[in-house]
Length: 201
Image 1: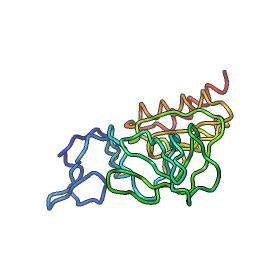
Image 2: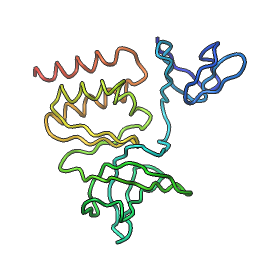
Image 3: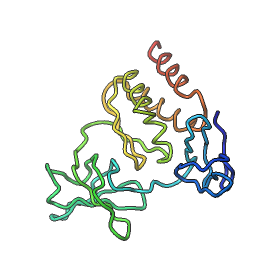
Image 4: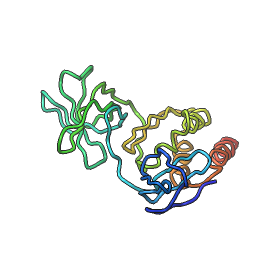
């Protein structure tokens, strides 16, 4: 069972280790506005900015090649920076890339490694806090979209999603549905129904 919780609301009488919560002797409390699943004991933020971490996979747009460094727009208050020694292939301004955060510098700059240019496709932006729902447990939700549309889906934890091939419009519709209904139960079945119905049209 899922329910909407507000900051300070008690989630459990037990002391649980869940992100965005605090605990005391009387139980566990939410620090955010979110959707709490009592079965899986997961708390999904309903809003909020992406907080970068080492190892995050991101999608970004290359802004400028300065010779020794390349700056990347991460669709966030943070900047991405690729040092020339981490460049494995040619990258130019305007390219859309998928990359990994190696480390964070003071001031909010993310040092990126293993950048790969994504070819022709569609870039869409979603609320970063909904990304875990779009991916699903063990990639189940994104696999359902890929299998149901034939579309290649690359997801950045910073809220950017890249789609290529297959039925991109149907894949987009499925992702938007997940974003809008991330706090509800039975979503996997409704997304499957959307994909099955659209494929029959």
